[in-house]
Amino acid sequence: MVFRICQKSGAGDCRKTSRQSQRILGTSKKSAWHLSPRGEPIMSSVSLHTSIPGPHDIHRKVLANGITLLVRSNFNSASVVVSGMLGAGSQFDPREKLGLAHFTSMSLMRGTKNADFQTIFERLESAGASLGFGASVHNTSVGGRALAEDLPLLVRTMADSLLNPTFPEQYFDRLKQQLLTGLAIRAQDTSDRASLAFDSHLFPNHPYGFPEDGYTETITAISRQDLADFHAVHFGPDNMVVVVVGAVKPEEVFSLFEKELGEWKNPDLVKVKPFPVITAPQKTFREHISLAGKSQTDIVMGTLGPKRSAPEYLAVSLGNNILGQFGMMGRIGDVVREKAGLAYYASTSVNSWIEGGSWEVAAGVNPANTDKAIKLIIQELEKFCSEPVLQSELDDSQANYIGRLPLSLESNSGVANSILNLERFSLGLDYFQRYPDLVREVTPEKVLKAAQKYIDPKRLIIASAGPGKGKK
Image (tube, rainbow, N blue to C red; front, top):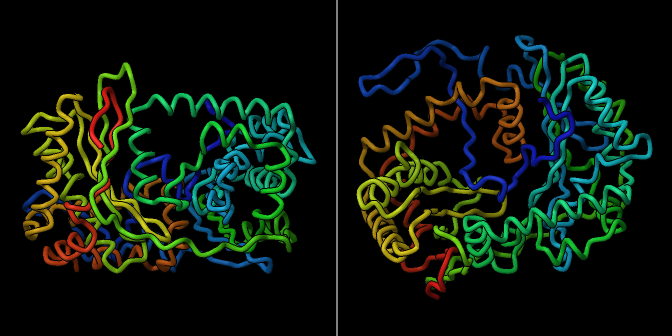
């Protein structure tokens, strides 16, 4: 079954939707692959200009109203993918109505001045197309796909949803109930509860510390008028970015968006305010969320991580791969799960955004093993921050980062999301070409320096959720 209308987070900066590290991969101007003696794929000297996105085939244009368009043609497939974002994120949510941006984005396609929900659904259904919106801290995101011949329908539907939503009462009430049901389910999920507690203590009174989908009481407080008011002052073309990848020519895309969105203006658009300063924990803080009837305790612990523009980002990312990702979840997985047998799963992640980030360890354990697992994780963090990683560990991670490039860019959606991140983080259209050299420049000493900058094993946020009262 193909779902023609979907509500999703798109390619924005959604945090809670996925706790995995965001990695933007690229490659140099070399293409043929063979295996090194260690078994990793490495690059030969053949040019990759024709297969890796870059300045030679990513076409960029900024419309007069501020919308940035990026297009990469791919006529090996008959389809097109659209991935975009605009700055209408949950950072603008009032504290008493957290989840408003999320609620608004989910409501955009429930009816417009030009078409009701059923008409929108049938138009996309008949074309086998999909389109959806979602929200994260910084952005409302949009994602869609269709046959190339139906791109005008996709863009027209997207434009109508952005410019003319009516937020019909019947769908407002229905969607509110669906959101509340989702929050009720979240409230009984040990992993979600530990994650929410971790975020709230690592980022107190900060947009990164609140869930984008809000809380039961804040969603309940939202009215239809709130959706309309939020849309009126936070949706506009000024900071919108859209990427189109597939069987279409750049000039056709530019002309289409000029027609559908070129006249869009919003003089009432509220500008983004500076984020509050983020400070690292001053001491270890531990909280346990008691959930009766559960057989597993989930742990999320860690500290601040780098924002994406930080010069040490790649050193942190590669170090994290060694610590809790590579192979069977790196050192943490090997020590805590495989050798000690204290966890059902154990891994680490680095989440890097525009204004900051987090460096986290997550584990699922038998409640009786909670304290033992936390103690062992802290010991591994102490080791990680006291001595350089092995050169062989770093070699493996570097080869892994460079070698998985073809998989990350083999689909139109993978290319579109990657290009969107290039624009979002101002990495440059040649970032994919520079990426292998940037990865290879990281040394064990740089990993150690980065680890010591962010991780202090004596100053951690430790959150857990499961049966029992736990420890404070």
